[in-house]
Image (cartoon, rainbow, N blue to C red):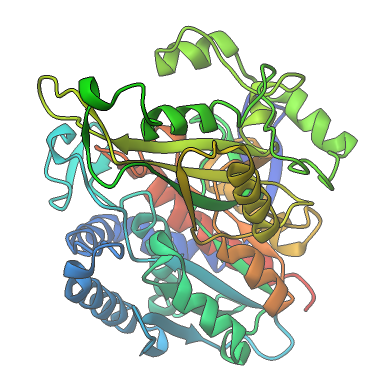
Length: 487
């Protein structure tokens, strides 16, 4: 889309798509704003690269100073953008970055923009084609840890507001930012802040860009996310590793016992066997079923892309439904005994399994965690000791599709990218979103710009440059469109 729009009282923009042409109207002031974005694309990219160089891995205590330096850099960048009242809100762990621009008036809605500046660990480093914290542009993509999750996405909104401010235009909405530094490690500080006195971040909608499109050709507005909870199981046997020839057959092998336990967590039809696991799950509406049926998907292509023989999952549901609106239980890792080179004939003294459960509306993470822990203890053999350690969790969330914010986001995406927008639910989790909606009494608007192929949490994470620039445009257009909503 050419942001150099003609000067007129109203601008009519026609977007050619495979579907019939749709007429979208934008007010005149967007000419200057979108022009500013176009003129500053290289500077915005250079600043994002600086942002990405910080090794802000929140799960590693040794990198705590780097996390704090990243927060300080972001705060300075927001101040330079013209955002006001920028501050680092101190917490027991990593600081929250706050800023606002409140100039639209009390009769206009307020949007809170949420994101996170912390990132996942870069391991395994040897699988990266370029250093993870030395961002590199290749083939129209920016590669580096945090590009899509979530520094690149949240940065689009900082630059969009800067475009309004430095163009001398009012975004038409009151804007607040709250950007946290431990989304990848539990959002404990953000949770405490929300449970305390969230008046400072009161709003009419919460704008979040930390999700992905359905495909590169189909732009998506995500309106639902699965929740998450996790457990670690430790099966304890003898008080030391034992010679398998001397002791084998005389005592229970913890690894064998662990395999027996986890083999009972699913039945032959792919359903989780934990008693009460599926109780209370909300049924899909007919509209949701129709949405799934209309989305292009091929199980064969899906399996080919992942290099597996065929798809697998809960019987009675399609793949798209299994990965987004059905609950799951998955092992994330198992270890015990000798795993080095060669062979060592032992019975290990213990074995460990880590697992996560993705949950859907109608389930609560604490309940599912407790049910799963109780079941594991019940099916464990009496020949070993069992320890079950709970992990953090978060509930699923579904945002109202008819909210003014989601309608504004859909229009903004269509204009910025020139693509048909669909509404989807994702299988991933952003646990804090449900708490945001509850404590702020405001609907979430999940307008993401990532792709499933962006390798988030994996080596060679990337963010498509057209999605970075288009995301800045979409954010600016969203503010303008949302300003037309009644408070």
